[in-house]
Image (cartoon, rainbow, N blue to C red; front, side, top):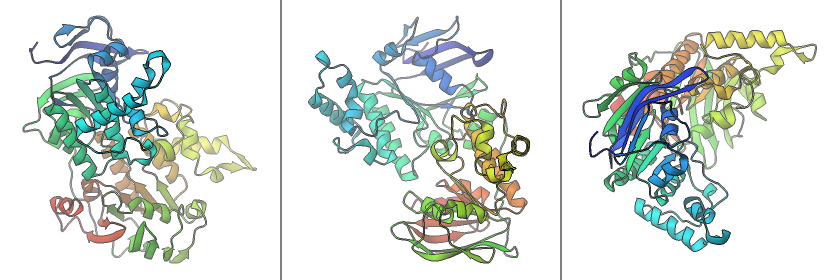
Length: 496
């Protein structure tokens, strides 16, 4: 074992109910290293992190070293005392508390005689933020901060605990490119100060940009450990999935197809202005742009969640005016929210109940929901979209992110829409599942469904749309044909 190794694990095996989650995995991190832990959802990444932090106990035969010292029984308390911190994707912060309280709350918990030393909390928070080189008002309630600054608060909280090894679980999943660049700079600063960072992300471009080495897991087993130098996104994808994915432009000309959706002069003050475009049958229209571009606000207006202040929406030649999203659904518009966990699905409910929640009126028989009709709809869409489940009655939360997203898509397809709006459909979804979702999108377009695909990742719209609208600060800045522009040119325009 190298003298430079901070953390070293060997022969890590974990079994849940007969399912081998980790199959003799080895893993190591060096001081100050930025190390990527890569793999599809369900490959064992989270299980490995929970072993390292003492949440799960591995089977006999495991070896665990920290600072070259053997650890016989890791516990959460011991992991924290060693400086091992985890920033989970949900951040585990308290929105109603201030920035300072979120960062330094452990001082309140551990205060002598149960008294809270607010000055000590604020000093700890300000010192941690200063160490990151950022300026955030520590007295502000956390709920007033954008998600990018909340990420920084979570990192600062880890530093208060004298972190030596920080795991970041999908830290950029909800960030724009400019926010991601800022976070990457912070990670580099942490690395330069000697803090090791393990980066878990589905965004492979940033993984290759920031990491020194990559450990790849697949189906609970170690595939290998690789230097980043010379590694490509396609090679990482192949290692993660065991498959090759060929990214090619699929854009086609739909000028002769009937217009399904026509938007003219659509405006909502402070959100978007004078939006105009046509969407034709079987066409996939990509919409991209940075945070504040107005993409989601436009989608919510097309879906009847917000009312426009000016302009008109026409569906198949008839002008529509929505009183609510129910009117939009009746007009044939379906909207898949970017926030799958909070808005797209009801996590405690069953897979079946989630799938039919938007189409209950189609399941009525004698004023009651017909179990036979419900079962038929559920079975059809689970089969059609290739959703991997145990039983339809299992809670939706038991599914992987990719399979949850397939159910969310099926929920809207069950209403028989004319227009499907997909708002960031691959957030939190691994590369293999992403390919499956986009294959579904292509099949739906081939069947004649008109699709709007919204993403802040230019490659997603470039390789999966027929036309691309680039929005900037609520306005259409330009429209691109993927067949006549390169991905590099599109990215340069979006990130300018």
